[in-house]
Image 1 (cartoon, rainbow, N blue to C red):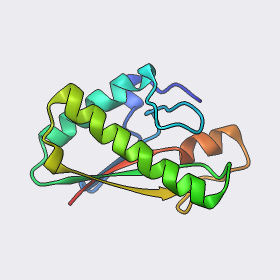
Image 2: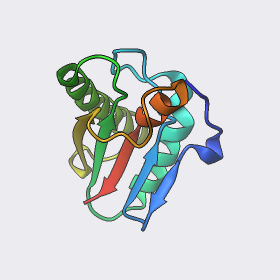
Image 3: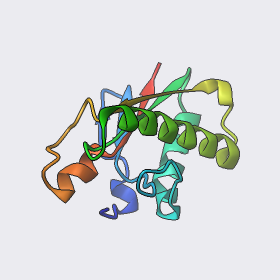
Image 4: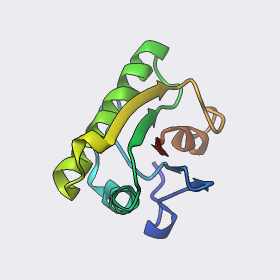
Amino acid sequence: FKVAEVENAVAKIDKETKFVTNAIYFNTNSATIKAESWPALNQAANVIKSTDGNVKIIGHTDSDGNDADNLTLSKKRAESVKSFLVKNFGINTSKLLTDGEGESKPVDNNNTAEGKANNRRVEFVKQ
């Protein structure tokens, strides 16, 4: 995994309706959030708190493993992010929705470590 600097934790901003980060890190084949994810989660919490309405958290994986397992894993990772934000930042659980896309919507190729890292991401979408 590449380590993103705090200011680069939010990778993309799209018309203020969505932001994407690949700086939330998980153990391999796990929904356990790694400690180095704190800066990105802190940024996400600040954005969510200042957002009117609900936010959907969408997990994505790289293509390692099979499709069904990756879909399940991406959903579990989105739920982990939601739980973390509720527990550590006091965000109302009803404000956060979750979903997972597995490996179905890559933003990069899955042939390199960097490409796979870019595909392992979490999106936060205003609803």
